[in-house]
Amino acid sequence: MSAKLGETIAISDLARACRLSMSYFVRAFTNTVGIAPYTWFIGQRIVLAKDLLAQSHYPLAEIALECGFVDQSHFTNTFVRRVGTTPLQWRRAAWGDRSLPRCTRSK
Image (cartoon, rainbow, N blue to C red; front, side, top):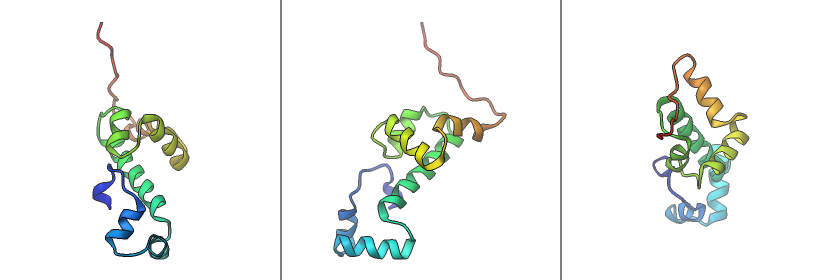
């Protein structure tokens, strides 16, 4: 599942791949992992996003798409709910004293 974080994947597809009913798959996953599949999947997307924020100069919109979010707004809203801060604030804290590149417009 981790390899497909940037893709849209339905829980029903995962259940079918395991040859289980969706309700049984969700119950088994939740009992084994401790959280529902969708919650786990979003959490893994946030982990990937944090890695990209800390290790790259990619724009937030590009990170959002790379991690499977619909757009930057969806990514930011989900990130704030999960982490408690915006992706940009988190990136600034992760970079610390290292300088972040400034986006400049060409005239």
